[in-house]
Length: 237
Image (cartoon, rainbow, N blue to C red; front, side):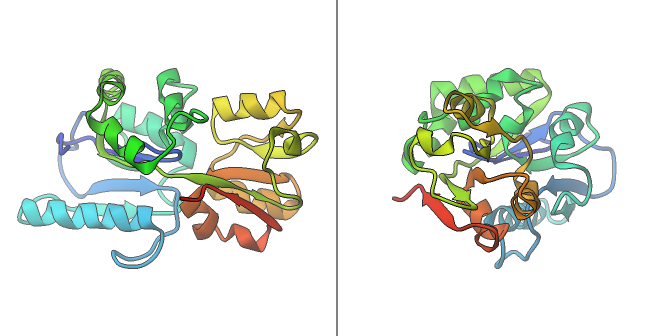
């Protein structure tokens, strides 16, 4: 995930979200941080919400209170898929959002959820200072967005029925892949692709509009997908 802001360059790579910021600063008032994940506190709850609160607290400390933040969890400020465009237009200061959600607008960010590309947390963390990370940062900067914090997460598959382990297991099912490339794999395997942000997975699985969903490890927990699932395929180790 990545947090994206629009005031100062303070500084995400995710199988889900990045932290980024747009390159223009607001003139006055508290900076707004938007994300789609459940709210909590700086010490409890979804780690992505906690991360935004730790970030806000640390910046406030370093600037002696001259920079303040308002945090809007659960897509309470704007719809999930509107955040990236809002950052680019200067209508939003920061967002912790899966960059691949913006793949239709900036195709290069689909690399954030490219199947099999990142195989460990160490490899994901190394992107920040590697050539691929520098190129990704350059492309986003051209679009008016700055990566503030780099994050990568492993993920898994929650299913209402049988576990999804091999591609053939998805045949005939309605499955959420989470990115264009994952969707291509699912289509090739014979699945019907469902496209929606992770905070809408629960409702879709509860109503039967979706049979299975690929999402980040934290989202599997924070969105309580165990309540609507019978099987879980997890990215262990």
